Length: 281
Ligand SMILES: C[S@@+](CC[C@H](N)C(=O)[O-])C[C@H]1O[C@@H](n2cnc3c(N)ncnc32)[C@H](O)[C@@H]1O
Image (cartoon, rainbow, N blue to C red; front, top):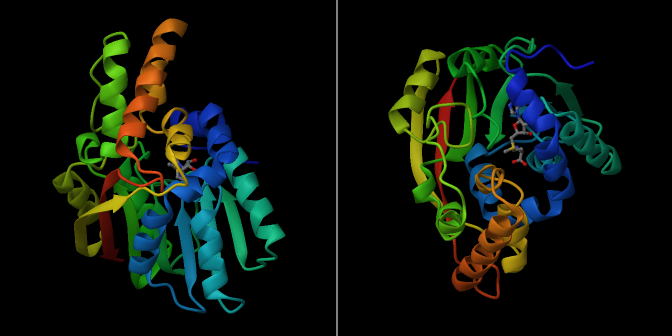
């Protein structure tokens, strides 16, 4: 049974279409975020024997990487609100016979973490969806050893991520006018403002907070790989929601052309603008 969540709207989002999309597109997502994963795992610098919590671990890409490094003397815990994504992560851990991986179907805002357990708390894009981020990070910190490392990546503003911005600007002329969205509302760009992010982490009791702007290339075999993600996840699907079939078709074609014009045959050419965040508990 999942734990009750203080953010049912968010949990619903990740348990319905978007959760199933992240499962069906897991290989694509893993591929496009190859460099993001490398940059953030390098910053996490996990060691054999450590205890790691992966917040919003999703389908388990980074959680499995940690489980391999920490080995039998260490342990990893993946916390996520999404049943389909967590089930997929569990399945992958079982297939890889990683007995040191455990999972909690829960909201990280309220999950009863074992006090002072983790050497490292990490997240690849799993911490921007909290309704009450200070409460969430305070709760997360309760599960960390004194001096434990927090390392995560999140997005800066959308225009700083051409991998999102280029297709959206291509699609926009073909779509109905969009209502302005609250940039601070829970969602993928909610930590775009550095001072807000710093205030949240400081408010939750973290120290030695470092927030580094990092532009990271998107990988992927070819344009089709980016197309598969961009049209089903990230910010574009919400814009396509109220479009007619005709508008959606034209917008999709424009996105395909824009990606083809910007991505080389090796799948590279566009980047995402990230904050690489680290702090101590
Ligand atoms: C953008 S996905 C990233 C998934 C994974 N970290 C990856 O990079 O493949 C965001 C993840 O955060 C999870 N999530 C959202 N809100 C959460 C919360 N309050 N507590 C725990 N997980 C949450 C979602 O279910 C989803 O798996």
